[in-house]
Amino acid sequence: MHRTSTIVALALTALFASATAQAGGTTHNVRVNGDIQAAITGAGNGDTIQLAAGQYDITTTIDPGGKQVTILGTVDG
Image 1 (cartoon, rainbow, N blue to C red):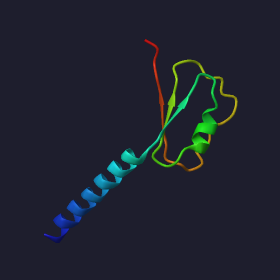
Image 2 (cartoon, one colour):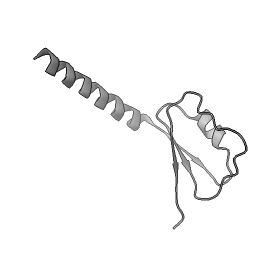
Image 3 (tube, rainbow, N blue to C red):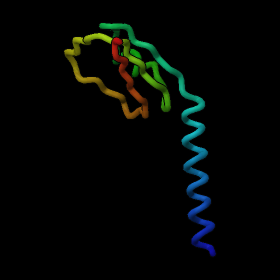
Image 4 (cartoon, helix red, strand yellow):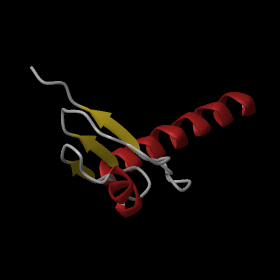
């Protein structure tokens, strides 16, 4: 019985944490050849970096700095 309630409590905690992170996230839009690193630097945990469709010339390593962000691209079409 104790094991079941512990598992349920952990599952609910994980679900709540996930919903909170998604609900509080901000989307940072980056235009073609925009500064992806600047968007990441300005982002917080749970934020999304949305890249516009196109080609990006990246000459340095992108460093998330330990942040938990999502980077999404779009497709022309």
